[in-house]
Image (cartoon, rainbow, N blue to C red; front, side):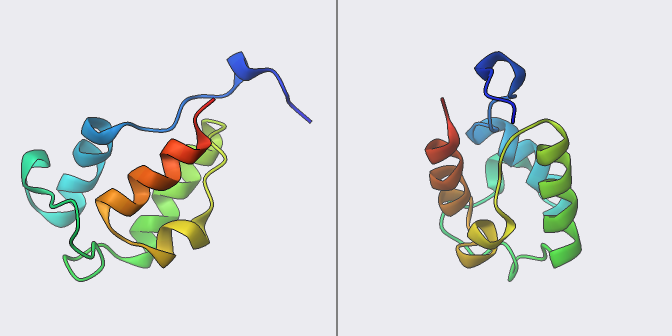
Length: 85
């Protein structure tokens, strides 16, 4: 088990998350709404799985089910805030 905090990449912040989501939603980062359902805006479950895979490869212990249960920018930011060291 890897317990060295330096070996874990920090979860994305709001701006980085907006920049990752914007092309998937065909919009600009500043236009990604905080409280809108990302799935209703066009994010697919495949998109979500790819993002989760990317973060897990970077050693961010993201939980797919947590993101899927609240698929909003604000919900994801709350999940990521809980992962910060």
